[in-house]
Image 1 (cartoon, rainbow, N blue to C red):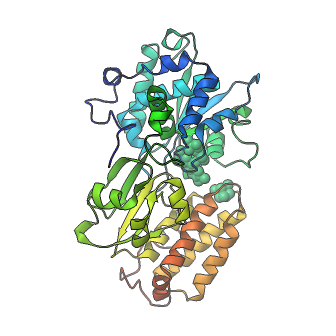
Image 2: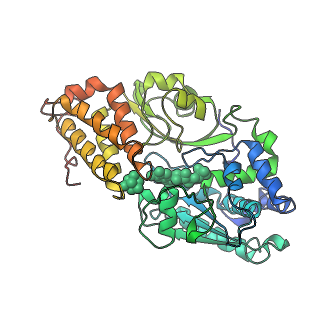
Length: 432
Ligand SMILES: Cc1cc2nc3c(=O)[nH]c(=O)nc-3n(C[C@H](O)[C@H](O)[C@H](O)COP(=O)(O)O)c2cc1C
Ligand code: SF4
């Protein structure tokens, strides 16, 4: 069952233009917000139970409430449009298809928190999403929805779009802030959290694109209406980007709590060529993998997924059929994390490379069965020991792959070649 709250305009002709957005009822919600007391807007978002859609699932209204009141410093909003987690491609659709809904969400958020300057930090590789957003921001300025007198209500707001340079770590909120300030994108130690000391040393709200876009819908329809979707503890909808061996990959907006089985086997048309689902990474490459059987039992909400030992993450679902080599899959995932480590913390800088190399060797049919324990020992020392959770993002999938597909790893050790894919893959060299 798909629900179209955030994706409601996707099918409209030229949905990304101001004319199409206004025709669909756009820019009629923010005046309602601007007529409210900012605290009441925050309360409404709290009441909706909206949780951040960038990965961590932190309650949005609560985060806004942490920004100090009555400070002399300017406050900022950073919209996180970095979207680099492998498997995740939902924000790009929101930006491409409905950039004005994001701008309206930004206006509402900034009013609620008392912000006059918002940044959108957008993934450097994004072409069309960037051009669409850039043009939409210009249209909004021309129409007076941004600038010195937003919507004629005397509120001042500017939006600056900042293009990244292609580093995954700049999606981590404090890495993003450093990068925005013109420095190397290296995460900061927390606390202090960005809500207190963020960009340029000032209080900053960092929210994902989907989160901010949900704010527009919530203000338009109310918290109670939003809570009609989803579960009691995970209200609302979530965009899942589904890739891999399904018949119909793509972006699907579903109510939280929908059985994973419904998404994979109904909305996505099941596994290609009538094959069996061997594994499913439900929330993006950094979350623990589920076996196909586990995936068919689980519901897609924060609590059910935590109970199943995994996470909702950013909703980047990767489905794998029975022909997939899990050692090769893990090797590809680890290649990414080793490459993207910013290098500040020894357990991450060294650990991601060590586990990548051990898994490369196993995939090539080398190594020994002892390598499996060595891998687990390294991952244990990586988790919870670093400045940000990129180290955990590499360690958690590794642990789960070994736990759930251990026999497959053992069959590789010393086999001389990958028993599933045959010849060892040419790209699996430590030099990469
Ligand atoms: C390594 C790493 C990469 C991240 N990448 C992204 C990203 O691309 N987009 C995003 O919204 N959040 C990303 N996050 C999460 C952000 O740090 C932050 O929690 C989020 O932007 C907060 O917004 P939300 O509360 O609306 O989810 C990443 C976190 C880590 C540790
Ligand atoms: S955990 Fe890794 S990516 Fe995060 S700050 Fe440390 S070295 Fe950088």
